[in-house]
Image 1 (cartoon, rainbow, N blue to C red):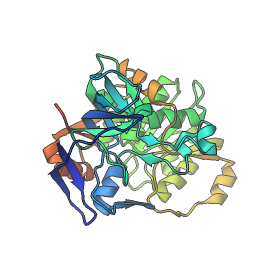
Image 2: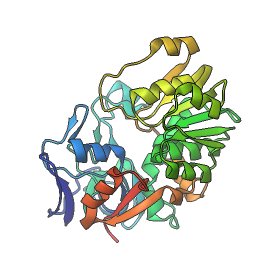
Image 3: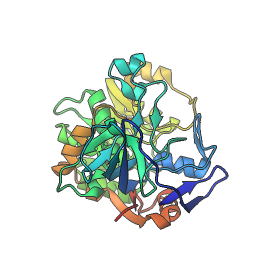
Image 4: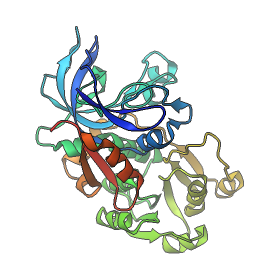
Length: 343
């Protein structure tokens, strides 16, 4: 079978690999469409995210739709041919976090597509049976590939405890920020402001229901407030992943409001303006992946409560996986780039 293999020294090559055999509690699936995530780009460009490092040939891809091909021995799972989205977190199910239902916080979890559990940029991949989520028969595989990032947005909005009518600012109109916007709208948010430095992405935010968008190039936080809500919004979502935008999020939230830190900072230690947070008595809630959110994500995408078509900007065949990565890195018109593995 064909696989797009990332090498530790750099470079993504299409190679032939044997089809893997599923073991007990495992299922072989055929990936259909795979979304490129920001984490994939860090592995592709830098070979690492924090302590997660590419030290041997590795297959990326954790946002994907697929079809069930074969169940492992003694595995009770969905019938062959069932279309699925696959949850990439592989928890131990034994630690205190797992026993408490916080499987995304498992201290020893694996993650499909992160070193060194091979992901979906190959024609067949083995995944745990417990990670399969059936898709409605009429749901396009393209939307199935958006389920995993949408689940992160659902988890973030749930953790924010958004109430109907509350005001929101979203910093960053990348795929996660745009999906947070769509989920906030589905959950009954009031005014929702979106900031970014890319006019094209801000246009997508407007189409997805933003009350107002702000091109923040060259703007200080106080000026941004004048374009959003002067007294601050009830909730601010930070979906960029930089110390600067996290501090801006605290500037833009109202006194005693909530700041939801969704963006991933690659540096393990970042400066944090504690005095600013204290002066707002802001609650800062970090988000790590998603939890128990696939079912709602599938429902939102299948029912078109989220118009995922507006977020997908490019599609490439597997043979052009490196070009797909470079396109996603290039910014500009690239929002969510998909790779088609099996037609």
